[in-house]
Length: 331
Ligand SMILES: [Zn+2]
Ligand SMILES: [Zn+2]
Image (cartoon, rainbow, N blue to C red; front, side, top):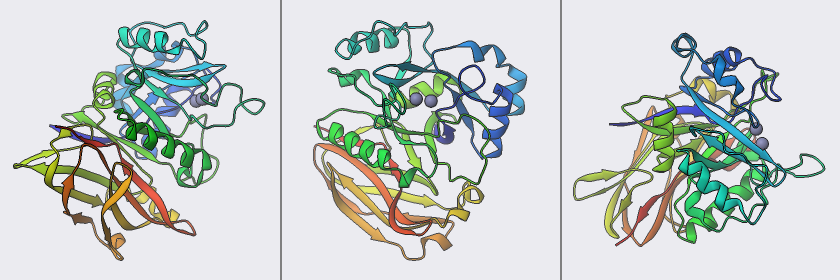
């Protein structure tokens, strides 16, 4: 059975430019309500030595990752069974290196694609010319804290949408890009990953990302499925075009104490098909419910479908609060 778990997908420790030890990072992620954390130090596997069964039992499961940090972009690589050297990768030869990572059983995500580059942060802006998008498993659509307000995230969301419209299957994630203890209350977004039997480890997380079982939220937990012929299919799966019912639920109880202080109130649930809204519900009082259910009837065309939730955020209204990776439709 697939169960969705709250993950932080992008972190650093003392082993690169962070200020956390590995145990400090894990304790902090646990305190912020996460079920698992991906360790993604810059160009080093050194922190893995600090991972022990006791640490994971006492805190949370740790996903073995690395942030490939190059002059032309940053890439999150999870669970590869060997170090793939990036130093000779150029903007036009990146596909070859993406294939090498997959041959080493890793999964690949583009980190903060629209972050400012040089002179602010050399290499932070994605400049590689990916030709084979099948080699990209996921994109970090939301980066840093207060993610819904960050213009680099708006650009990433639009870029991802364009790639989906071109027919590519790519999952979405968030990443706080944690470098140390938080000095003020921050609204942290969350990547929920659908893992087998609710078990979080490097292998189950890789499988969830390969299969596109993810969604990103800054508040309520979601569920989104298409029901056809009595069978329910969630993010990452492919259904048949034609008539279908969407099964949507907004769970306002899960992790609520971690987000309610930021004025988050969902008000509009939208199903988007191939970039255009095809069903919408306004729920004025959603925030007073434990679980809000919406089951619109849809007519599916070949392409993709995504759930998007909008509402109040801090002092703004109608702000994107959550979105799923797509469900695909094909003959
Ligand atoms: Zn980075
Ligand atoms: Zn980073």
